[in-house]
Image 1 (cartoon, rainbow, N blue to C red):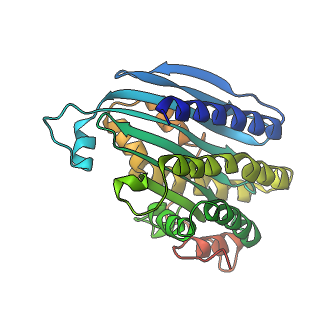
Image 2: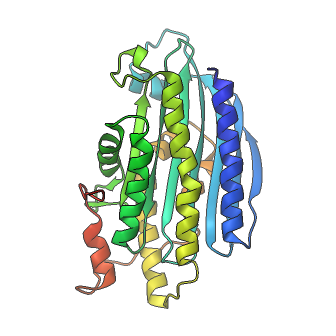
Image 3: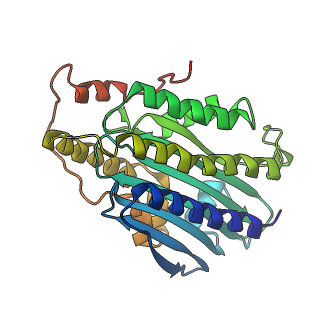
Length: 305
């Protein structure tokens, strides 16, 4: 299997997700921005704004090539003298809805290959509700577990825990949302990583995760897009968006790495909402729905029974 085959799937995945979101939104259309990377390759950034459901959302495809950056060499413990080049391709998505009853969602699926033949997959999908609804959280996690179980029995418990640990705002001691699954450096078994899966089988798993996005999120869009909300609930949404911004700018490895290595700033910061608020020492009323939401934002919640 060639990297071109993986790129082709990711492009088609971007097309399919944009079509599904645009149809579910019913008002706005994605605008495409083609760009070239300074080291080689480029991408297609697609943005939808001021829609019927989505206030701002992005679906990015990229395929970048070049010499391995010193920061990545250090992270991967590569020699400074060897002539390593890389290809990195993937799709990255973040949706910020208008209605605070519709959750924020993020997904990323990616593939990385070095010129020495080393390769791996990474990615994940997680949900950040402004108001945590237990039924929705269980449905979301059951869907992910079903997708994972088709490929390896250890994937869901391992990657669910990884998501809890990764999507954690350390300075707030709270998770970004209700988590999901997250994985990285997922290498074929012939590399000795013990998952018993070939490159083709791992790609099938990544496809499964990628293709789960549209049906999961469009269902939530349809369920809550017309639910009435108050100005107080809108202000709460802005505060929760602020937490999202804090995570992405302070803790998210992809954002930090992209900015530090002179990546395309507009595409990297596509994940940020159009508006977010911060209020000093805001504490919701005891037993309010806002307080109950905060109580769910912790690691280790078992959503699948």
